[in-house]
Amino acid sequence: MPAPLHILQHTYGYPSFRGLQEDVINHVIGGGNAFVLMPTGGGKSLCYQIPALCREGVGIVVSPLIALMQDQVTALRQLGIKAAALNSTTPAAEGHAIKERMRAGEIDLVYVAPERLVTNEFLGVLAQTPLALFAIDEAHCISQWGHDFRPEYMQLGTLGEKFPGVPRLALTATADAPTRRDIIARLGLEDGKAFVAGFDRPNITYTIVEKENPLAQVMAFIKQNHAGDSGIVYCLSRKKVEETAVSLTAQGVPALPYHAGLSAEVRAANQNTFLREEGVIMVATIAFGMGIDKPNVRFVAHLDLPKNIEAYYQETGRAGRDGLPANAWMAYGLQDVAQQRNFIESADAPDAQKRIERQKLNALLGLCEATRCRRQVMLEYFGDGCQPCGNCDTCYTPPVTFDGSVAAQKALSCVHRTGERFGVGYLTDVLMGVSDERIERFGHDKQSTFGIGAAYNKKQWQGIFRQLVSLGLLQVDTENHGGLHITEQGRAFLRTKEPLALREPQARKSKAPRRTPSSIAPVDAGLFEALRAKRLELARAQGVPPYVIFHDKTLHGMAAEKPTTLAQMAEISGVGEAKLERYGLAFLEVIENASTLP
Ligand code: ADP
Ligand code: ZN
Image (cartoon, rainbow, N blue to C red; front, top):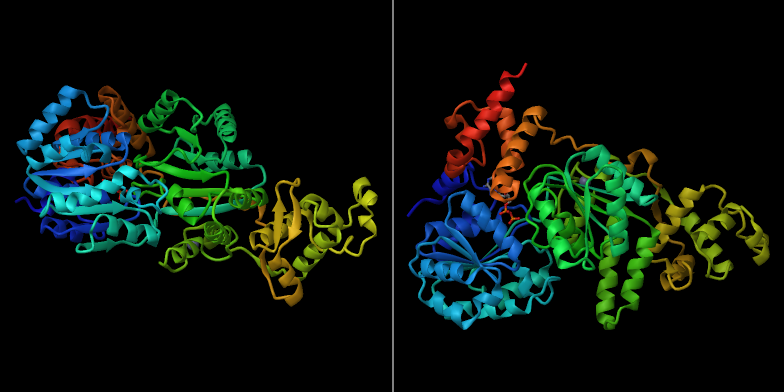
């Protein structure tokens, strides 16, 4: 039997295992069942691919999306591994041939959709196939708690009875505890071992800015940090997706829209361009992202607030799968809070569920208004933790706080005295003592709260009101033109007058994050671009995404080491034997040409 490390080094071209990989692999090779929780980019695929290669027989991988399967199979074939996918798009003759090879044990890995796996026909094929293992990828799809629930996944629970002795592993990056417990119960993995890595994505820099002019802000963020990079911009509505894509493109940043209102063809075409070309930005609703395996998404930007921390973590987690530095950037404002609160209240859900959703939204707002390390806040939410990370906006530029008790009291009494029906703009004018015809008409210029807030400017009052809404002391009536009213909690605050620390508005300068210290600028930018061009050319010729040929990280390695022989090339991380043979000379030539240029 080949040793796992030998396969890692020779087939994949990686020098060593990461984190829990080796433990999982040895456990499964020994015949054990496993539950594997690793963050995105943690290297889950190797946890089942290498045991499948080491053990006798065929490894069966259950995967929820055709695009995902196809990508994995393409990548495996590039490594010289015998892999195939069986799904609704597989031509009958090819499907037949794959099943023949399965029975003969002549294939290493077969990817199937759950619907296909549980058919009697396919179970019959499996009964005649020597089996190495079952891997259930994206296993949160089996859980009623996961957002991607797929009823077909439920039937996978019987695999253990049908194929005793064949190890089963479930893999997921989903962080919440109920989902985890549910996966283990439904797949009958209680007798197996759970491998749980931390949730941290150290290569992602988190930044949350106050929303002013989101289009201009996101444009500045991209220009400053991500010229030529690929990324995802999330918006809540289809209309905003369209507008944002048009606006970015008009300003010279190639962007495509993706939302459920577009035809299946347009969506597929846009996704394909995003995956196969370099430097394309996808502007999308959350309909986009599941199963997107593109490793070099360099940033995820949110122009609207997601619904909770789990969603934020999952969506931002699509950045930097390759481990290179990546940015998660979000613009957030009062309207977002109002909108998300309104979604919850107007939904047709039982009270108990609404209560949970309110709590989850509050936790997310806590993250947005955090005055300490954002990574800490997020990891603590998942029951994990860390030291201040030094790689988020609040670590780079610690926010200034002030005692906001008096300001909050003034704001709340102004809301009260004006009848709990006006919006932030009006209330701010009253507080600052700026009269206009409307304020005079209502007689609010004669009231005791008129002009009591002159110590703060407009922007500061906006920040104060936003935080009071985030903290749940005030609520926005979206039905009633954004009028604010005082909540129970707000009234309690007025009675007890407890101290309240608030955040100063962000300085305008910190609108966009600087490049992180571990900047991804390659050692030799010119050579890196030349290598990237060669990669794109080779990828286009085969009709595959560029990253299945080599990852950016591998190209960075080449640009830094400048190998001149195949033996030196083989030392670069990510250059395995099959790729060395196929592409080694082509890339050596690029390096040589670059070095002979004047
Ligand atoms: P996940 O499925 O957990 O999101 P992947 O399995 O796609 O992660 O792995 C993420 C990236 O890290 C892939 O590009 C993979 O090739 C790479 N990788 C995985 N394990 C290692 C390793 N031991 N050394 C170097 N790179 C690795
Ligand atoms: Zn931090």
